[in-house]
Image (tube, rainbow, N blue to C red):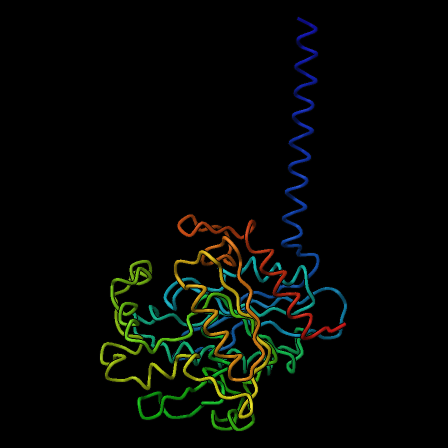
Length: 353
């Protein structure tokens, strides 16, 4: 009995040691993904209140001791209907832990906000306004306003592309079929939308776009505007048009073209875009890799620098926090490799050897 007892004790000791090693390894892995000792975080910074709707962002500053850093402005996905900046918390923390970039993780209005009355052009206004706020205020967080990156996944990639492609199409007039231009939700004091456009105030220096939708001008968008689109169900909202029930893509094509990055790509000789990295999952059932490759090729044919990276075997939303059983994605398993590709691309742009 004593012999058995000693054997049991040894076995228990071995098991405890194995569990401790596993726990230590997991802790180190998690620390590699998010180490708060490597950055300073200011949460819920109020940057605008369009029509009384407060918009905030979280700002991460590396603790590596540099005087200033390029700035990554990040927009979350969710079909313009669901989620908020928290869905990108882990991606933002990973970048802050593993690279030398200030990260601004941004909230914007959703179509389902304000009793389901927000329009897509207003969401674009928010994305434009966030860039202008960052440029005017990020120096307080050691960010360099002259070195800005826009990034996002899914709907956030669309908004990032809109900043690049339509950031020169600004007006103080209300968005309409006759004037399909945008008014940023935030404007510097005593500055008009027209002045921002004239001064190229929304110019950025790089874009990383992950599995985004780049053409909303096709008649198929009507499915998105119906209850066939599950995001309306998830948001608890009644399906409607992107601009309200009085507008549709057939009768108001210019409005839908105005929010479609693929329909607004100038030749590089007319206006040069910053370097782009576009990514998608090879098994994405929401945004096909073919559509992302097609948009990448459109950019190249127009003379812009665009790189495509396909994540083999991965689905949609591989950058999102947590895990998504429906899509089979998990941040811990999937996101680090994609974020490392992003960091390598940005380092080529901002920290060339």
